[in-house]
Amino acid sequence: MTLLESIADGVTDINAHKGRTFLQAVGVILGVASVVTVLALVDSGRRRSLEFMAEVGGLTKVLVANQPVRDTSQTALQLSNTGLRFDDAEALRVLPMVTQVDPIAIERLLVRYGDHQKETQVDGVTFDYQYVYKFFPGRGRFISSDDVSKATRVVVLGDSMAREIFGSDDPLGQTIFLGDVGMTVVGVMQRKEYFFDQGTYNALEWMNRKVMIPITTIHKRFTGDPDGRVAYINAMIDKAENIPKAKAEIETILRRRHRGVMDFVVWDRASRLQQQQEQSQQMHIVFLSSGAVSLLVGGVVIMNILLASFQERVREVGVRKALGANPLHITAQFLVESVLVTLLGGAIGIVLGSGFTRAVSSLIDQPAVITPSMAVMGFATSVGVGIFFGFYPAIKAARLSPVQALRYE
Image (cartoon, rainbow, N blue to C red):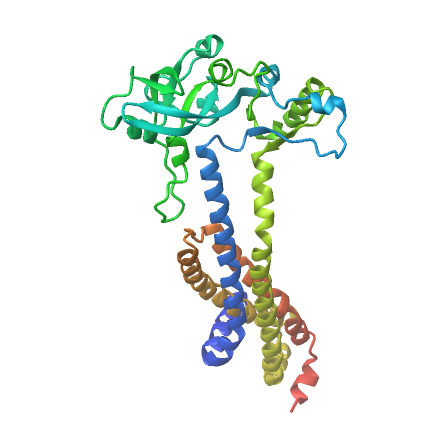
């Protein structure tokens, strides 16, 4: 018996016992459907997170934030540290792996222009801000290095903020007041938009409402802070693989500048994304476990039905062996039937999983699709189940003695 004949015999047997075939395949169907649905949702969540992060700088951004010292009894040295400063950021520029550094100082100020008066967060930034956040001017220009060095009275507005203050008028060249200080509008940023799923909320609207001035202008004209304290520092790393080394060097430089006091913390986005994915893994493990149990149950059912089928066909097997069929042919005959059943179950499971995916993605408002690689994985899993659980009945049939088989009643 050739492999082609074994396949033909398996198809004939499956077609002759449709009810039995369905019972064999149902566990595989549910298992594959569960597995591909979870894979689709996990992949969708990861891709959406990467897309969103790419809109605000990508995964190579490292954040250095202030962190209060947690010792209950702080030393005089710890008390004398005032947190991150502007010159800390300047010190990081010497690192060869750091491509841009942008310290951020934050102050709430009253923004006035004509009838518009509203207290708003004002960010003190540097020239590198636009590259760190992938946020560029749509009109006019951004804050320059010369603006930072001279603490000039210029301001750049986000698109929504410009519309709120000026309406349909052209903001460029106009003077607005931050507190009592007149500032010239030199630029309006491109509009940033990112909508999760089918929602109507722009997750990047906070960027469109920005009011940005040179960081030194905040220190000299508003806070009067001689230390040039900042809320946090962004640093862009040249390559993702250099992030761990860059983090270590950033910590070393800042620890030395802060005289050994760890009043700061260094975060990288890749690690934070991994932590978020690990936190959501519990749900994924539950669904994958359900799929694995379904596949296990389906495999056991396939093995039991094949064993029952073998008992019904003992004399047939004996006749074939007496006519010259070798053990490999007999093994192939039973394995082919098992694999065909699981392939059928895998195909139906992928179709069912596609329906599950659409239903769940609609329920949680998160688009997800089953990619070709997931379909291949579903088929591979089903074939693996067919081979693993069909192997024992196939070996048992292959080892059957022709004499005993022909005498079997």
